[in-house]
Image 1 (cartoon, rainbow, N blue to C red):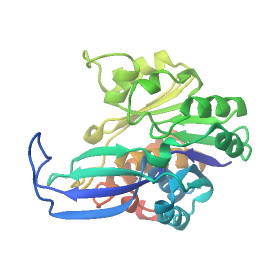
Image 2: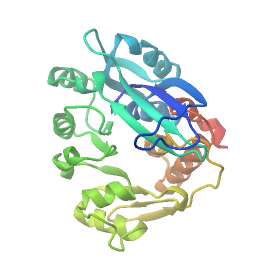
Image 3: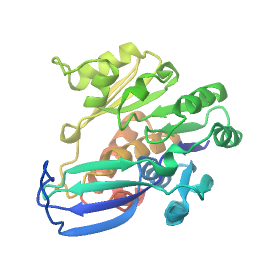
Image 4: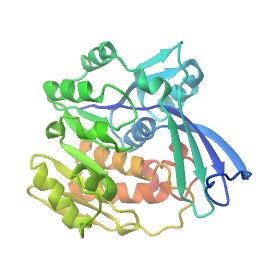
Length: 296
């Protein structure tokens, strides 16, 4: 069994600040850190470090070749990544304040240059029962979801960053929703929580998509897994956060990677919680993701 992460590859520029810049304000950064990122890259690395046979598909510019090296060093197969000469790699400008919180601006670049031909060529290498992990930082998502469904792949969707494009996807094909509370509310079409949080919110999303499993992450409040047969609540591990950039991506990779290794849902949720807790104690996105050995 293989997992294909079809997603973004970014160059991250992280600015260390006392506070997030306000309208009309100019402030100095204490430090600039340049490293690899993108939700797709982060999740591929987390999947590989969790022990899954991981393949990444996506696109970069010539400036992003070092991203391939980092994926390969983590154990990710990069044969399905296109290197384009007419566009630069996607990038992110990240503000990281003294409390460890982030504000992020994304530029799509090569991530928005995926073609149907590339999708068709990639899908030839996978078969029924393989997993595919998707986010919302590349184009052609609709076509990718339809192709994966036709193949009989298990579709994992992390709808981040959430926007109207997600609501236009054939969401009935999704097998696993990896969402936070805000994303869950938006998928349900609610402008505010209206009293819906945690397990209750997961219940409503499961009712809307009865054939899917929902994994709802709630930050320091932990997470919950729910499908038509089972509910598992997972507490968060208490740590001092330094940088939360890749916490959700780490959780996704270790949860799906755990399932692929044959773990029960409860065990996979616990590993994912441990891994994401370790990740937030470190600087950067991909560089913060731990190995499985570090969990024990």
